[in-house]
Amino acid sequence: MQRNSWKAWLYLLPAILFLGIFMIYPLIDVIIYSFEENFRSVSQTYTGVGFGNYNYIFRDVEFFNALRNTAIMVIVTVPISTIIALGLAAGLNAIKPLKKVFETIFFLPYVTNTLAVGLVFMIIFDVTPFTPGLFNSFLGIFGVDPVDWIDGPYAAKMFVMCFYIIWTVLPFKIIVLVGALQTVKKEYYQAARVDGASRFRQFRKITVPLISPMISYLVITGFIGAFKEYNNAVALFGTNLMEKEMNTIVGYIYTSLYSEAGGFPSYASAAAIVLFVIIMAITAINLVVSKKHVHY
Image: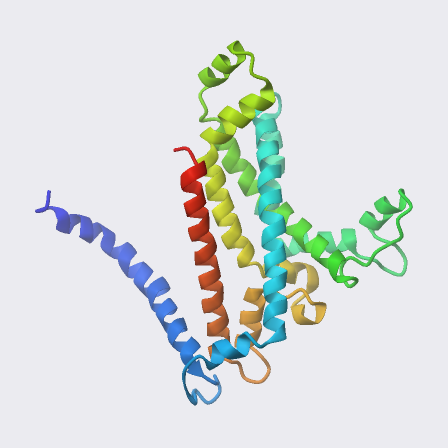
């Protein structure tokens, strides 16, 4: 076994090289940049080494605004999208006629261009001088005054942002959960029905525990994806997210890196490392919790 171990390393070598070149090396480079104080991309110089970049971003109001926006998106979209996806997946798994058709319909937003979907949402929620917009027209039926969801109050813009994120992530979660539900053996449900268990109790005691590994996977990847939100915000509110008060941490990193003053890779690197630490901490917490509640 040990004699042939070199073959295993040989097979792993391409993947190791790929990870080293495109993941490990960039991460080390970003860590180094984050400690190079006052680095300027124009002159390619810096004034020293220390925690000055971290001190700067932790004093920057825009960074905390981006952190607040990202945190709200994570807290709202991850649990809601997972719960809705679980309910829809259970419904799709229960029906027989036109099942494939409904699965295709639910999957369409996932393969549709992000900017195209963002444009549609802008039309639905926008307010123009001539029309209140589709969503405002619906609210007008209940006597609610038109709201500018794209350029109006912060709460309105955040609602649209979270709604849009949930819409875009639902298809992938539904498909994954439908596949997981199909692996649950029918014998468990037959035994539960013999014991007189209700459908809800079967779902809570049989379905959820048996597909909990996939639910855990979707929650972890959902947290990671929500913390990296940027393109969806651009699709709705344009590139000037700071002016709209809808910037995210990734947007803050991008703005710091490509600012009109010449760019500050050191500030962007420090913000990127903070985001990396947050994602790693959240992932570690999820893994610890999953050991107690996930049934393999």
